[in-house]
Amino acid sequence: MNDLPDCSCTDNKNDFMPADSWRILRIMSEFVESFDTMSHYKEMLVSVFGSARTKENNEDYISARDLGSRLVKAGYGVITGGGPGIMEAASRGAFEAGGSSIGLNIELPMEQNPNKYQTKSLFFRYFFVRKVCFLKYSTAIIVYPGGFGTLDELSEVLTMVQTGKINMIPIIFVDKKFWGGVVDWFKNTLAAEGMIDEKDLDLFQLVDTAEDAVAYLQECHRYGRRGTVRS
Image 1 (tube, rainbow, N blue to C red):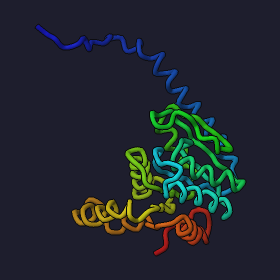
Image 2 (image 1 turned 30 degrees about the vertical axis):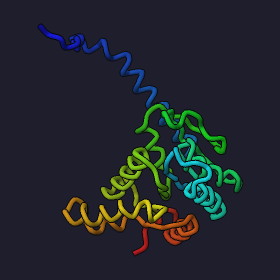
Image 3 (image 1 turned 135 degrees about the vertical axis):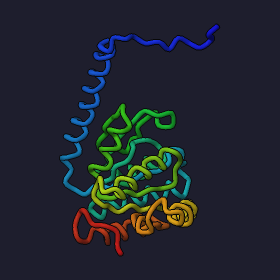
């Protein structure tokens, strides 16, 4: 007697074609809308990643808000995931400084409502389209403490830069206490066991403050929008 659920499917593959075809069109529409919108920004854009759960009175929130303001005053625009926490803080700082605050929104359990500090809001159904939009239009990535989502975004950008799938851009971790253990693991485990090269440890910079992050970023971009890490 078979107690397993009925997992049978039709032998006619054409039964699946309408749904899949419309899904492809929806994916295309997200690419077209986001690319068309983002391509109009003339200033260099910086993506800020971090936890949606960070509260307004948290030191990281305060720092990310300061970062958003400093980035705008330095001539940059800010891209975030559009949600609460660190994303709200960076958006808020940029908005209050009178600059571009672009939110790439996606509906998630911790991010039901877009934050109110976005000068432009885009909405995505598909994570991978949203990730492409982040990386295609960012001249730097700044990463604050966060959870699985932040780690996912961080791993994506490190992999893309490491493998040369995107141009090398500054990748900056803010908060040495939080990221120190991760960086030590990169060095003492991944590099030591040959999972990454020693030179891969130069793909990112670890800082403690928003001021340090912007200073390092400006040093990297001294020779243009595709500036890289310092040797």
